[in-house]
Image 1 (tube, rainbow, N blue to C red):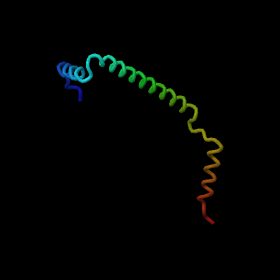
Image 2: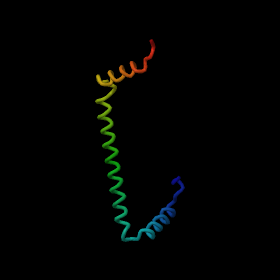
Image 3: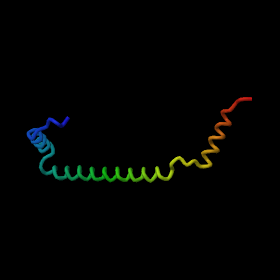
Image 4: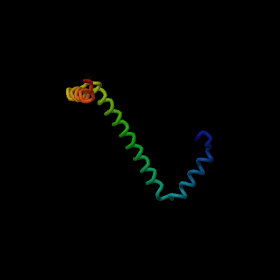
Length: 81
């Protein structure tokens, strides 16, 4: 999609952005985008760390509550005389 962009295309895009937002608001806009990207990357790293920690502790271990619930569900559905 962006493979056909040349230097002139980028210059035109920058001029349009400059006209839309103005020279005074452009630094604040880029700072805000950079901060958003930083926060997004931090959250992705935190989610990966949490997923790794969660998968290591609860890897298929069944508690007694799960076993009794499954047994009572089987008894409730079993209607053979």
